[in-house]
Image 1 (cartoon, rainbow, N blue to C red):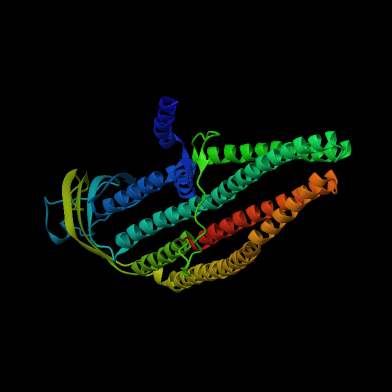
Image 2: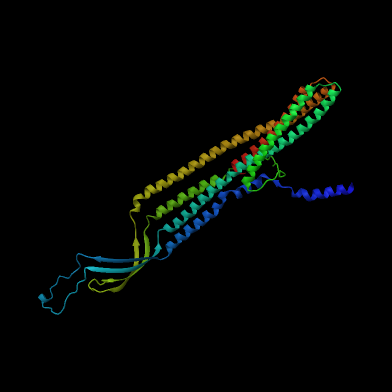
Length: 423
């Protein structure tokens, strides 16, 4: 016997650490990592890198090749009759009406008014908007985890209490059967208890099937198989003390405002002049000498200043549109904070309600238990029917179930509050 006891202790020591456990924080992490949208982080980052690389190429020399063949109705001539003024043997050349040109131009930007820099900032802030929006969508998974996890905890507690109820009803059925033999009870008393036992078993089936459905949904959400032996750790009922909101939606609004501000910088850069160097090399007929009617190579190099004054026409409207966009985002932020504060007030009210109910639950359960014990004594003396005993047993169980429900409601309300403020 001693050897068996030692073996059982050693076996328990080896097996117990291997029992699977799940915490709600662990479910948060696993659900977010398993969510298909998580793969978009890399895609957003790659898109941003491609856009920035393309923008940087604007600083590289820009090469343009062109080819042209034309036929003109007239060409430049020098209207001087040399023979008339006594000059002979000399003929002033004229060019052909068909002309040809091949050219290659290289432009190098020296200053673009900050256009490329503003464009790069726009790409960065746009990528940040997409990332922050992704964080908002992924954070919303936590709310689904809350509903499933605490639902499973509630079903676990209810199933456990249901099993206790069945054991108690079975014990009373055996006692009443003995009372019948002694003439202290009749068959209807036993039937009343058996009906309650069957209803308890029926309720266990319903609770178990619903629990299995919740576990299946949570398993799919976290991307991990959850066995029937998995222990769901009940978190501590610690009410968050912090009042500041840290929701990812706020970072999403900030990113949108920064994007509007970079668009404003880009609009301002649009009214600035551009300065650059250029080199043009070509081959054509005629070349740079318009009076030489032959194919010639040529080149031109210089500095070019350009200024698109037409951008001033739309600058004011574009900037007003940007300011309207910023005000729209700020209004969305205020609305979100307003609704969040309403939700927080509601959750705090639920927490206070649950705490107030739990203050009396233990006393109610104790009194119901005392009433049931008194009914058991009366039943043993033959002064109480089985129906009345079943009623008192159910009253005690209802009080216990209420306490379980209030505990789970409190936990869910606390974690809903944490979700609302991202604590």
